Amino acid sequence: MLRMAIQAKGRLNEDTMGLLADAGIDVAPAKRKLVAKASGFPIEVLYLRDDDIPQAVHIGVADVGIVGLNEVAEREMKLHEVMRLGFGACRISLAIPKAETYSGLEWFKGKCVATSYPNILSKFFYEQGIDADIYEIAGSVEIAPAVGLADAIFDIVSSGGTLIQNGLKEVEQVFHSEAVLVATPGLSETKLKEVEKLKFRFSSIVNSRGYKYVLMNIPREALPEAVKLIPGMRSPTVLPLADEAWCSLHTVLAEDVLWEKVEQLKALGAEGILVLNLENMVI
Ligand code: ATP
Ligand code: MG
Image (cartoon, rainbow, N blue to C red):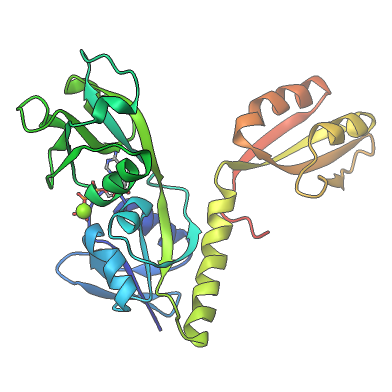
């Protein structure tokens, strides 16, 4: 049986629990229990703070874990990255007071930068040949310049709203992160097989995100044009209707082109267009 470390509460918890549920893995949420058995897959879930997940997976307390790439990089743990999960996207950026003129990385020479990610930052500064002081703080990094603790910050940004609220501007995006499934290096053959099964389930969910299942009735004579518009996974499915002048066309469309394609299909005479959510896409 595999043991998986996930965030007990916080930004990754909800999406992680959602992914497990979609993958048919039923697990009790973190309350007072640190470990919970799951049903639907031979797995046990270990609820941890995200900071502790890379090490737990590294030493094998958990065989796999779901955590942000940022935490893995900061702890400098060599883990086996099984797959990216497509949620928890953010970046770690350098930000300076908005009134400052920024001419390039040289600005940071001799400055003091507050961060909760000292390892990622010192590696970056080293690679770029910048000699700056790094001041490590655990939280509320964004207020450091205003209270005189530092000249600049290196912190997680997603929308940028927090920076603006604190009179800061983002000047360098250094690290791009998202949630990943990681595994202990050198797992046994048996456990690796289980990890592959887990990856298979997760992949079908991650792949189906951003896609819709679309079906419609279309005049048979418009079919060649319609097929050109929607290639589908291999090619669209065409089913006969009782009325021989019509047929039913089924396909999978990416959400970003969905409405444009639907309008074009309507213009070709398509009727009764249904757009359905896709739960899994097993490629
Ligand atoms: P814990 O109590 O588990 O240590 P935390 O407070 O350190 O939690 P959260 O704020 O819950 O961490 O963020 C967890 C992860 O979510 C981050 O490490 C990062 O990978 C991801 N994330 C995505 N967007 C953001 C964001 N806007 N701010 C912070 N983290 C984000
Ligand atoms: Mg944390």
